[in-house]
Length: 157
Image (tube, rainbow, N blue to C red):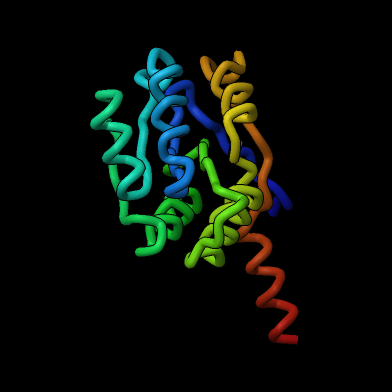
């Protein structure tokens, strides 16, 4: 089997929008600024953030639980399932977060699956205005089935 597999991010991206409490206002303003782009994609987000974006921008955002109630983990699970291919997460580096381990797990899984992730306005602006937003994008990730098979074989020896 191959050590890596090719995944395709479609022209219509599945974008997760997440913001810590101290960054929710920035997220709403950013979504308003880029509404003309975001409306062409499938949007989801954690609890309060998704509700605020919908209320203030009229963008349709599927809501999951709030971050501290498992929303970050729900988004991470959707990444693993191949149902989210882009994350905008305005995190607050100056405030302690009670669910920090969940946040770190989400960031880690985004790295493992090689999906674009922005954690501040500048990076989000660069990503959302990239020419790649209007086309399919193929990228290589580890063949997880092969990796598991190899690990099992080593354990059984």
